[in-house]
Length: 251
Image (cartoon, rainbow, N blue to C red; front, side, top):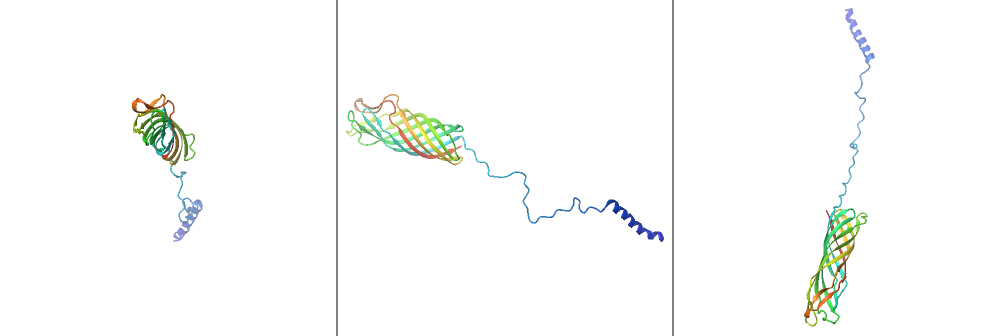
């Protein structure tokens, strides 16, 4: 009986030695848990920011359409003066950018106008009324754009090619007529313009251009009775000055 009374005292002693040797167990595996924030904080970031997508680059091919008004000088002949009216002018162009600021352009201009033959009284009488005159200019040349400040792009162009001049029959005051000859002649143009790029693919354009046919030799513009003709001498018989506006689409 006396040995049984010592058993509780022995258990207490052994427990005290174990507590002193190993210490109390840790309250949490990695220390105290951090306090929980109130509400929801910002999500994690990974060093990447998101902004608007990069602007699409303008294409190398440009297709343009335009219209406007042209003024013309008179054409002097052996028998009088051919007065060419101002009129509308219409056209289109296809350009390719070779490198930044430099390109080649194929262009077409259509000029439906009227003319009036004012005779000097030596061979033929003058026109009784105006007759129609149609011009088709087909040109190829270069385009140079020195700068592009933001959305504004000025440019300079020079082209060469041909012009097809198709006059209608001229009715004279004495009742006779002058039969027209369709002319296909060398021609060149020089122009200055400005483009405003609304988007990288669409621009509004304004242009001033001079169109000049070239006659290397004299030629008959009209043929009258008795074999006589209204001839144009070689050189630059007249010039036309066109103001146009339109749109350009880049691909």
